[in-house]
Image (cartoon, rainbow, N blue to C red; front, side, top):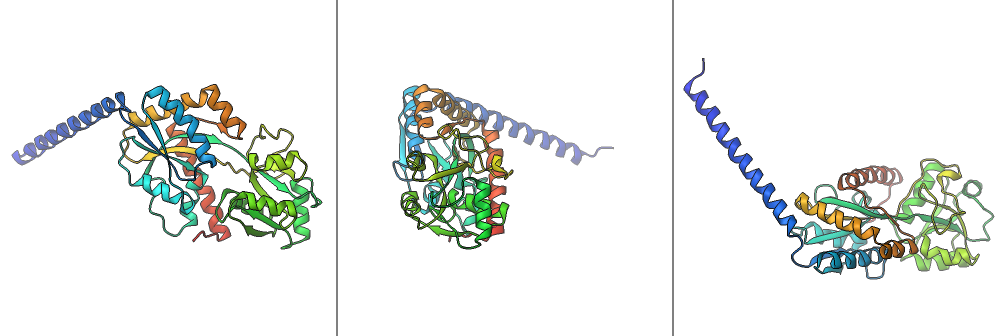
Length: 334
């Protein structure tokens, strides 16, 4: 037997459900409508690094293509500082309208484990758009070092524990984490020497002050080609186009080793999905433009352009991978 109070409660519940459904439908319709007219004003494209860096060089040709395609200016806004954290914090606090987007580097997924406090959460504060590009690091050594392969380098390091040094562009940089991953997989004892960027590290490698480092391919390539430095392996699972004869670390006998220098596009969480989809489609079309593709490939970047869901899964996978290594090695950037 149903009481009058039950009938009223169910009726009220149906009314509330109906109202909520109508609100959701209206919100969805507004989101689709806003995406149809998007963008109708300039889009702020934050690059959390100085002008001339890798993320900047990737962003500008894509921004130019989007400007021409959409008829609205893509404004590149360089906001360097705190290992990319400054620009990312700015983006996290921006309105989720699609008019602020940010290019994030691979350290986007390692910084939460490297820093004790961050003003943003990569998962909660951002919505992935697409993985823009991927590129390897290359393991290089001074020619005076008697190692012509990764396995020979590992054997040499084990024979001289603590006596070999490796350079990096800073604590928590991809080059640093790549070396720590190699140490974790092989058990070698090599000493970390930090520099402010790769150029001074390369100079000390050339002079023999340090014996090895993981470096960006475009930075190291001139010295490799000139025979001043020896390339042992690249860090991705496939060989680099610029170094086709140089094996990967994995195929050199160390399966499970993979380090990507990737760049991706994210927006503040809550950005309407139709706008996220339009951004993703615009970037993918830009990446297929011959002038953009040639530009990126010539600088060592491999264009990607995956879906938001694929990029989200990749971000979470990278966070787990580097979080585990950073905890294991006791690495801190602050």
